[in-house]
Image (tube, rainbow, N blue to C red; front, side, top):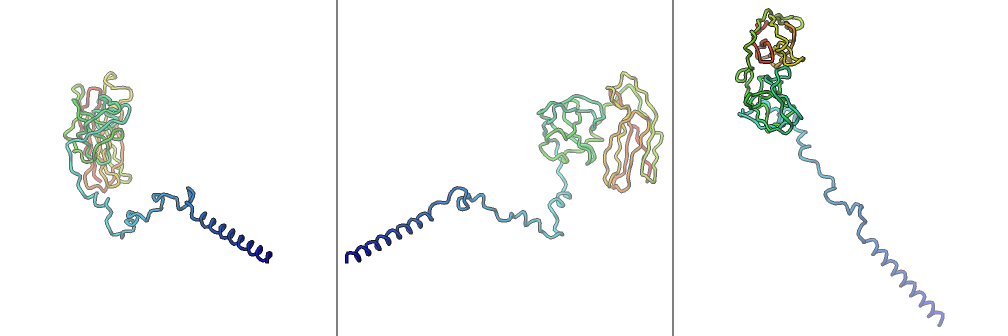
Length: 264
């Protein structure tokens, strides 16, 4: 009987130990997951469902895109736009281009007011309000608004300073090569004294042309020291090409001499 009681005691003890071990395992399996485990990832890291903008890309091909509507909506014209200079020194010139006479320069962060642009979508020069208005390239300014909303002031409202010291030239010929669409223009020489050059890089003649390229009328001011120049003028524009020749010296401009544009 002693042996049976001892065996029964051992059997009960083993049963108690087994139950205790099982309970400990269950407790360990319900502890918080370590940092970095999937259950501990913040909700913001959960992949988002497809954005509504992705669905918009699957619109039918015959649905006009927003940009299509914008191209036919006229931009309201404004009197002026504020701008800030981003270049260390930004040249402001008497005419809308790098070959025109230099007036002065704006320093970085200067606040300026733009009051006009050129009659050409390709030419990003803006007229700056000043005692003597002058032109800057828009690549070197930050504009508060749409550049294309500025009024067109050149040619017309804004004018080049006229020199009293030299006469204008006269266009001698304007001929078109029908095969290449090249136009060659020649004009009478107007000699300029060496002391009347702004600097050694100044070109004596400025030829302002509005010519057709890829169906668009573009502005192209060309500078030269010769009395002739050649350029390409393609067919296909809704507006006629035209141009004029100026004589340039440090005091201003003589002209213009209008170009009799050759037909197609």
